[in-house]
Image (cartoon, rainbow, N blue to C red; front, side):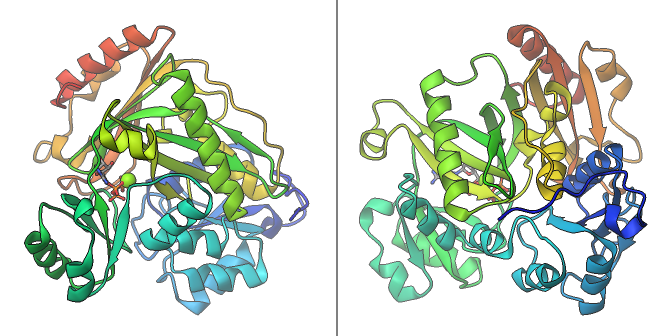
Length: 398
Ligand code: ATP
Ligand code: MG
């Protein structure tokens, strides 16, 4: 499908120049920043009156995601609409799509919202993922193949940052975990021996043209992304190529329009699982910019958020170029002292430090408050500086 480009800076009425986003979190905020710097007006729909994106947008519609009036107001205000989180209710996107171009589409978002649908898509596209089974009843739990244990039980819907998951060693633990997760539909995944985790962020336009960033190496702690390294040879070239190819195949198979992140596991070389599945296994997709792509704000000539604006507006997609090596550290609420703030002055005295705070008004443990990216020419030097930043902030070394 082709869409005529929505040129920024058009002077024929505010409506035509406004881009909308469902969700007002940090990803929405960075989309708003990118859209505004290119000359668009922005509108955000998020029920939270203090949402990070709502605070910086021209228009903030603070209604529930399924509120018909709020949705219609968003559609009337905007020339096109995107989303910043995958749990936007599909009916909301469908309603918006009746009035305006919406990217990514409700169907692709619906697949990314449901781990079972997502894995079915992986298999349909011939991209290997962790062996899995559906667990939606005590009978299904009793019937899972023994080879899936030890495994990880994950709710099909609404999981993020490691929430809605439980590691299980045997059938007894599996049943108890399914109970604890609320007896909702789940998938049990075989626990794989991971050597590394990586991800690819790509953008696909209305005409099917795709561009991508180089794969990044990602370190998770307690199910939450902690560190992303990008640039240099963070991955062997053959693995990186394979990841990009797989990500493109998955986007193509969805008829996807927008920015997509695909997360992968690199399995331990020589393990039985690597022999069975191959060295690279897809974990999941996010139908939006991703935390592992935040470094692009400071390390590339176009950020993932600029690509989101370009795809939504039907503007040309040009392969981005990474000009600096980068290490990104997530800044979680745990780092905030009572009534104060972390020692940003010390961190900002380091070369190539870029601080991004999301304007959240309460620091909670595990809550993503911001990130800091260290950039430079030499990947090893950047890594050393990032370790210094981590030490200053009290983030565990990596
Ligand atoms: P996010 O919000 O970061 O996307 P999530 O809640 O969707 O997280 P997953 O990506 O499914 O959760 O898993 C979180 C982390 O748990 C993974 O990054 C990985 O470190 C570990 N993990 C998940 N599934 C497996 C598996 N099958 N085998 C081994 N480790 C796994
Ligand atoms: Mg994940």
